[in-house]
Length: 232
Image 1: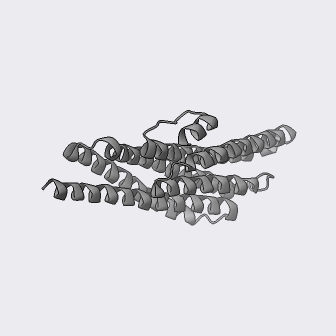
Image 2 (image 1 turned 90 degrees about the vertical axis):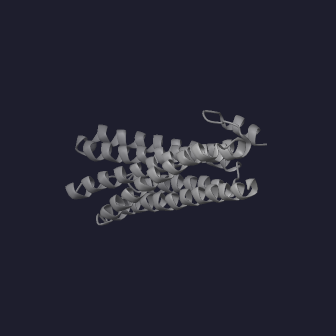
Image 3 (image 1 turned 180 degrees about the horizontal axis):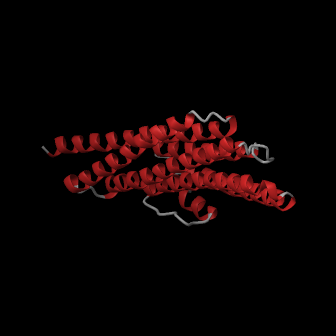
């Protein structure tokens, strides 16, 4: 009987893990559509992004509820408990990434509808968004493969992403000082760049949760050197 229950429990954990990856796929598509809207001006994608947000929110609540039931029914311990707790944390970050995608799309809608599109550094968001997207993919791949080493890769990329955001911010501040007519658009672009930077932060969180899941070590708020040491 205990072996039978154990197999059911393993199947439940695997099912939850699969649903997290399905949610991650939706969120990744949301973010890519938001960037496509920004760079291509396809405002029709905004409706799709909002529709996906509803699916993401539903999955967030559903997976969270399932995890609560698993804890209550199975009373997991050790690595099984870490898996459930990691799932709860990851879906929170995924939901917030989805929120950032909606924010980027909403700001983009404001920019294009007002005709405020002629400002340098807009193309620089392509590089910044590619960095954030690659970080998210790496973190989720680490979760799928239970590979804690992705935390180092993602942490290094986060440093590059932070530098890119600061560079965009500095340049846009210069534009605002030189030409006050660019202030409104520049502030909107800075807000978009900050949302992209926050997507990277959430990706880094996910990568750190993978370290906790696999090794039982909490590396949140740790330096890159500490993360490298803990993983090795």
